[in-house]
Amino acid sequence: MLWSPTPQIELDWENFQPWKVTPVRHRMADHYLLKPEQLIELSRRLEQRGRIRTHTSTATADTPFNHAPEMHPNCASAAETLEHIQEAKAWLSLLNVQTDSTYRQLIDEVMDGIRPFVEAKDPNMSYRGGWIFVSSPKTITPFHFDKEHNFILQIRGRKTVYVWEPDDYLVVSQRALDRFHARHERDLIAWKEEFRARAHRFEFGPGDGAYMPATAPHLVEVGEEPSVTMSFTYYTDSTRRRSTLHYARGRLAEHGINLPEVGKYSLLDEMVYQSANPIRATLRGIRRLAGKSVFSERARYAHHKFS
Image (cartoon, rainbow, N blue to C red; front, side, top):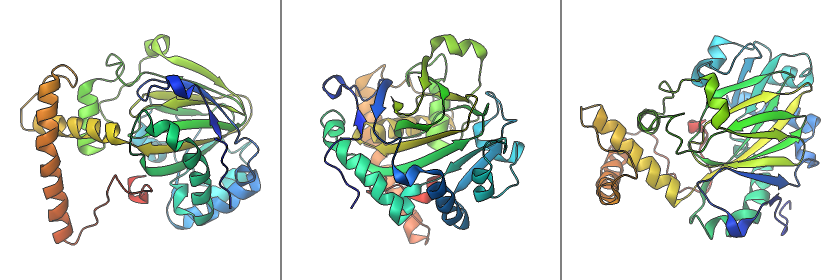
């Protein structure tokens, strides 16, 4: 049994704001499941299930994140990459580790410890996921954002992490957010060097971390030694609501209907949200009738399809 009553993530929970970037500290750096030999074994299991994402160190800040693996392919196996990570010149992610029975316990250990604090401010945590990132020295994770709330924790090595607030629309526009939620595409995200001045800059070492709200843009630069980082992700009522609003805006825009920005008119937002929910439910029902898989964002754990 891996669960511990002591939260593994530390921050000022009383002043925690679910939609604000926040530095954190954690107690995970020496966890035995995050040792190199354990990660190599995990990589073998996950690679058999297609749950590895990797690219070489030739990727840059402006590389399109969705296309980095094919633009900068790493041809070595996951285990070989991890065994030789110092000289592999590679970035590798172990995706959806909650689908592995051993690492699902690790996800629960951490998420159960923080759930009461999170839900006091942001109710109904769901869709728990875990992602482990292992990088060679001087490797960059291209500029992008993700759909989930994310506690990103540094386990080994050092890296610089740039994070922007999720409502910094000079960095990522609402149109780009609409497109992402409607089609899960990041093609309207474009990196500019001047963005750095607007970012929260974190210098991570073991025990350091940050809370990144859903769709907070970020960019990562690894230091002079290999890096291991783990992210713990989840959805809440507020992430589901924002996702639905941007989904509706994105789909309407495809038909030439462009709504005012989310947050500008609260009554309009509520009308869009209440209208979009039954439509999305109907579409999911049609998919079920057609024999296609449908996964609920209210499920306890994230489904691997959305890696």
